[in-house]
Amino acid sequence: MGKDVLIISNYYPPEMGAAANRIQEMAQQLNNLGCAVTVLCPLPNYPFGKIFNDYPKKGPYKETIQEINVIRLSTYATKSTERIKRFKGMFAFARSVSAYIKNNAIPENIIVQSPPLLISYFAVRSLNKKGHIPILNVSDLWPIAGVELGAIKKGTMYRYFLKMERYIYRNSTLVLGQSEEILKYVGKIAPSTKTQLYRNFSSPITPECVQKPKKEVRLIYAGLLGTAQGIFELCSQLELPDNWQLDLYGEGTEAGQIIDYLQTSNKAIHYKGTLAKVALHELLPSYHLSLV
Image (tube, rainbow, N blue to C red):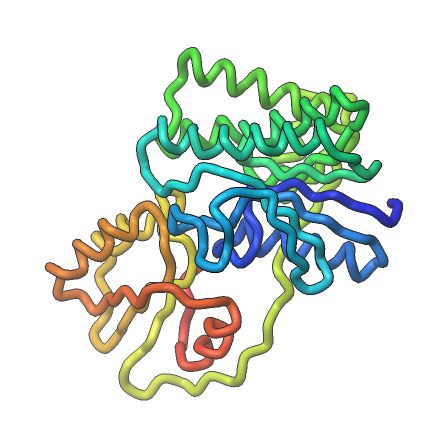
């Protein structure tokens, strides 16, 4: 791979969640290999649904984070569960990506993150029009996952998404998949596209040794609080043993439901708000178990 690499992603720190952390890890590893990495992403807004403080309301906005060049484009920030608003948010960034690709010089080496499917489709299609065949990094299978989660119903829109999915697999030079199941699925749809297993984990941390619990057992969940994570359902069904406590950190579309439920519940489950990654790592040794 050459020295200049462009990564197109819908998520990037200081946004929270696994998706942002995985892309940051990819960018940093490429940087360690001597590549000059640029990340094209929206103005940070996830999972709060509003542009973060200290950032402008419109892009492009350029900054450098840990030697990674980051270009943040305009988007429509929302954390609404309404499909129209969620679609509007994805389409706004997809349109910004297409315009950027059309009007700017693009390096030879490009990695496009999928999902979101709509954004990866616009990115791959715009790159193809400009003569670029990107690498596609697939961390989940959409629209199938959307159907399983109840976010998408099989119908006209689902068929459009299937066409988008086929297009991005067949018009990428390489598909990186984070599981064998993903690669097998892509291989059926685009047998001529090369695939590679790439388990894009975050760098591990080594916390201080945690003492064995004497009385109270402290359990932590820190992550997104969206439909896919199912934390609201977990809270409603989980029965903790005596002297156990579960603390929740995070934000997402289910955060309001979780807060309302816990206010009327006598379970030893507590919502603690959000934490930055560094602060979370400092807090982990005070817990005995973590929920993944």
